[in-house]
Length: 269
Image (tube, rainbow, N blue to C red; front, side, top):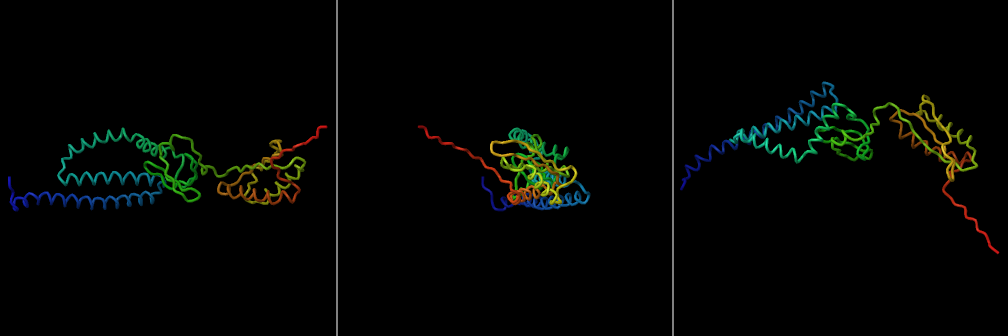
């Protein structure tokens, strides 16, 4: 069967118009979707909605709008949407079974936003990583570590596993254990430590600092020291006290012990 140029042109024009219309719908639709997502985030921010919920809802709205744009574009192209939706449903079931972990991460994200074990800006430790929560998305939580690395952790394990949130309490306890040699003056050690504690204004007076002889170890007498600080001062106080003790113990006649072994030789006759 032969077609002349006029017949081919007549057949191609309707399909060409549909294709151009579908392409135009796709491009314009995606532009409008991006604008609506930005507008949604701005409205949520102005409404003083929690930042965690803002990023989560923004991601969800973006996905839903883009799916609608793609379906609309296919409809304009002439694809029968009833059959297409049925195919999508069947494919969705298969994909859902294959991506059960991903669905678990989605459910985990919903649980995190509902129960709020942490929020954007909190400093947490989970799944072997420690950092500040930068963003809570639909499937993952994004952390920024103290050395400025970006870590993506699936929401599923975060919602069902143990986690430490260092930002929920206003104060934290700092613990040290300092060892001095046997024969050193323990009261002198207490005196030096109390002076160092009093000299650091970041250490709180209430609760009072605690100090005691913890253990009589093999080569040292170990003194435990516990103080309370405001949560943001934790690392600074911890490191500063270590440095101060190292610099002052020697001047006070206190020595830092190290593992040692005495060997006695005897000459047999």
